[in-house]
Each structure stands twice: as structure tokens, then as C-alpha cells.
Image (cartoon, rainbow, N blue to C red; front, side, top):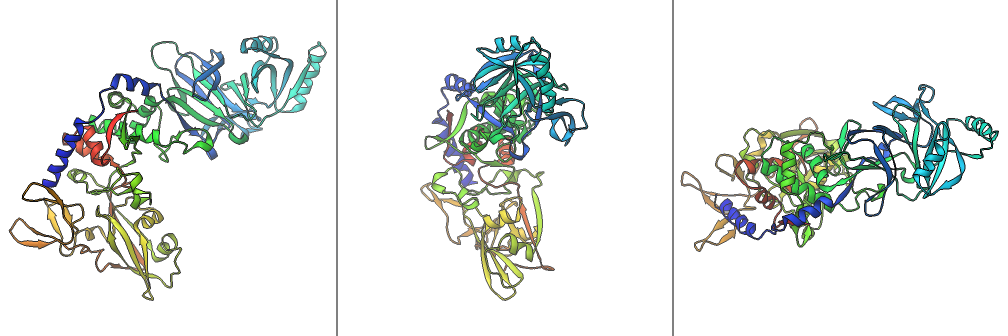
Length: 570
């Protein structure tokens, strides 16, 4: 209890120094910051994708400049459109999605062909190109390499284009046949073969930008593949492939889209506010993680789960708005605020889990977590069983293992109390040491807080002490005492404590079931047990929930899980 008291006092002192007095200016700056979120890319790139106005009246066509500002070229009043690559594509259902696909050739009567006719003249504006194209059935404006053209029709074969070309030539209209392009994108009226606009940056990597047309005070939103998105979209055929689809929107709208995907909107407001700051900070620090695909952050848990407006509610939106623009700061820079579901009782240092330079991430330091354990209804226990062969192939593949693994033990623990080194012994008596990080990642364990043996093996077989009937310690790591002058002093070694009955007990490190003699294989296999879900670096979401329930503010939550940070504005 005294350790907790000292920590809380320290938090109160830090709160006085938090630079949160410039909200009106900095929050406004944050709202103007945009972010590029990759929705579909790489192997998930799209041949065709549909857009439909949720709020708005039609769409604007153009591109995004280097500052992510939309440059309008033209527009349409159509409220249901599709972007398709300029190959032959066919409308219908394929792979569980109804849009335009190349694989539906011969099975769909709605086709957008890749052959067109182009008038010989170029034009100085979208309006002029549209006016020229409108004189012909199936005509449409095109923006190719920075210039406007008028194009006519779309055909799946070159012979079809030649037939129309001959008809037009008979009336004195000269055209040339344009075939498919590695970078071309057509915008069509969904469910039809009617092309509204065509765009080709000829490999300049600008991509086609599409934004909904604002008609009122309500922020525009667009449906696509079952999700409702704020902001606009950029479609680019990166390296000449299918469409990479990127949602470009204000940072605060992005945070509103991530929060309900990462945390329940029914949770306490202070927990959601802490999550909002962590989401915002983490997004800013990712930098060029997806630079090869020309966006900032993806929409999966590889970065942060993002589902647009789906799942968002007044509570989650309010949590974002109350913290608008606020980020975690360490050493004058935005902190990379990793988070996860639960740690089972102790977070872990980034240097242990991923081998990062700890001095570069002083705020990602492992520590005992006294908050998660207050959630008596939280079931975050798990077990996994692996054979000797699996351990050899997944963890010890770099070693010349002489025989089957017959025993294993946690031989060293981190200061936070999590495993640091695992020792394996084979049938010839040879010993192999593996880092806990290699075991965690190699075996795909749910959490970094694990041990060897059944769930019952969590309790030490001797030497441990239990606090408040719930926390069992077999190490002095992370413990503090207060001396006669009131100073907080770190406890090291194997100290003695007096229990509730007045007896003196020594805390003996390494006396747990799996950290002394270890465990032996059962039918050639080993059981790993653990608590928590996630990598254990940074903030525990369930811990944030517990802290909020105990009355802690979002600032206290953030400063507990991210050591030494302050919270301020970008």
C-alpha cells in the first residue's frame, strides 16, 4: 500500500506541470491535420470498389497535392459510383463482394471495357472536355497526364472500338483508339457500364481523389464495403497494380473511428479518453511505416483497428473531443504509445519484448500492475501445449539440438516479474537458453506474462509471500520500502518481511514451480500457462478500465502506463 501511495503522490505533482492550457489553439490545429489510412492495398488491392453517399449529394473528382489538400477537377451528381481499374472488368458478386471484377468475364452482362476512342483535341478544363464528350453517346471527360481530353465509349475488344471509329470517321470526326493503361482509373455509375470520368497520372503517384459534395452543416460521410467513412478517398494503381484505396481525413475523425474498434464505448469515460490520447499519439509516431504503399497507417491491427464511423457513439466521440489534439510527450517528442488488452499483472519493457533500445523509449518500461488484478470478473487466463518438435522448430531452430526436449524452466525473470530466459534441456543433457521474447513470438503465445506448467503452477512452492490474498511475490523486483526519514528505497536481493501473523518470511527469488526445478515433458509435450492478452508493452486497456473505475483520471492512467510522460498538444 505504501508503494501505491508514493506513486499516486508523484502523479499528483506531475499533473500540476502538464502543458494543457493551450487547448483552443492547439485543438484547432489538430482538427486541421490530415492522415492517410490504407483500407485496401497489396494483396488486398481492389479491381473495383463502390462508393455511396451517406451524407452529401454526389462526388467531386480530382487529386490530393503534397499537403493532402484536395484539388478539384470536376464533379457528378451521382450518389452511387464505383472506381475501377482500366482493364476489362465486369459487374457482379465475386469473393463475397459485389462490384467490378476481372474474373467475371463471360458471366456478367455489365462490362466496363478498356478500349475507348479519344478526340484529337485536348482541353483546358473539365467543363470544356465534358462539353465536347457530351456530343457523343457514351462520351466522358478524361484527365490524362495533366491534360483534359474527351473520350467516347468503352469496349472489351479493340475490334468494337474500330467499328465505332469507322462510323465517326464517315461523319468527319477523327479519333484514335486508346487501350488499357497500367495507371488508368475509371469512375462509373455503379451497376452500369457508364463511365463518368477517367483519370491517369501516368505513374506520377498522385492517384485519383474522390470526395463527397458537402450540402449542409453535417459532416460528409461515404459508404464503402459496409463501412461509413468521413473524409475523401485516393485511388492509386501503385506500380501498375490494382487499386490501392486510401481514406484521407482529419486526424480527429480518424481517432473517432479507431476508438470504438479498440475499446468498448460502454467503458468509463476516463478510460476512453486515455485510449483516445494513446491512439492519436501512436498514429502520429508511425511515420512512413506504409510509405511503400503511399499512405501513413493501415486500418488493421497491424497498426490500429479502424472501422470508419461504424460502432462510434456519443460517448466515444465525446472522449475524442474532450482530448482533441492531446498527445503523450517524452523528451519533447510525441511518445509511441503502444497498448494491448491486458497484461495479467505486469507490463514489460520494450527492450525485453522487441529488443528495442530502452533509452529511446524510457516511457515503455515494464512494471507491476496493481490495477488489473482488482477486476475479479476478468478472465484472462490461458494455456497452450506444444510438443518437443514444435519447440525445437519454432524456438530452437538455430541450435543444434541433439535429442528431444525433456525439461524446461524459467531460469531468469525481468525486473517486472515476467520471464526473461527459458532454459530447455534435451535427452542427452545438453542445455539451451532462449529469450522469453523468442518463446513468446515463436510459439505465438497470447501474452508475455507466461510460465511453464498448468495454471496451478503460478503459486510458488516455497519462499513466496501473498499480499491482500491476491498478489503472490517470489521476487523483490519492483518493491520499495520507506525508511525512517520517509525516503522511498528500492528493495533488492532476498529481503525479510513480517506477515500478518507476525512471522518473519524471506522472499526467495526463483522459487516458483517453473523457475526452480522446472517442469518435465508430459507425453513429449509442454504446457505453457499465462495471463493477459497482448504484447504487454505500454498501456493495458483492461488496466485503464480498472483505474477509471477506481476514480483515476485519464492523465493518471496515461502517466502510470507510460513512465515519465506528460500530456500536451502537438
